[in-house]
Image (cartoon, rainbow, N blue to C red; front, side, top):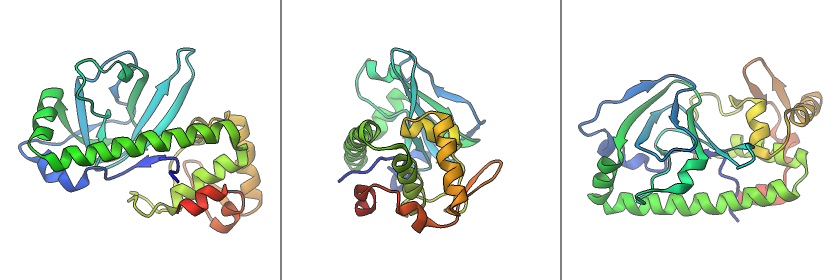
Length: 229
């Protein structure tokens, strides 16, 4: 069963030499907008280092974070369409200072066309993203708040395919962004975090959340999440 794809790392990491050939990485500062709402992507970014926040916006103005994308991925998600209208609902923002390689649409199309294995890998990643998003939608509709938050924490710590630039047990995602991920308001997320803190499951610092006892988190997780490991 697919599980929510909160983090995307290394989608096309094995092709990094191809992305770097003849290109010089540039550094973009935290909060730099890589692609804004109501626009179609003109530039694509291969992420060499750092994290990018990807958000969607409903017509009523409600925003939700889709995922945090890390090294070895491309943002915004690439499309061969001449005018990919769906891109207008997506915003990509540097979550911290990031190191990227920039491509125009034509440059990336040419690169993908020269490497069939890269095209296949990007297709597989797109399918995974679709199904994990569908599963996440069902969770928001049916799962209680504590379960959603603990599933998020469990996945953060337990996804060993992810290579963090910090200790695995230390979460750099803010409570505001956790609320957006799991479809709760900030007050409810804070209440849940305080309960987990009182139980000795986590430690809350000024700029981090540290997971002290994963077993205590697991007891609140959905069965599908634990089995999905």
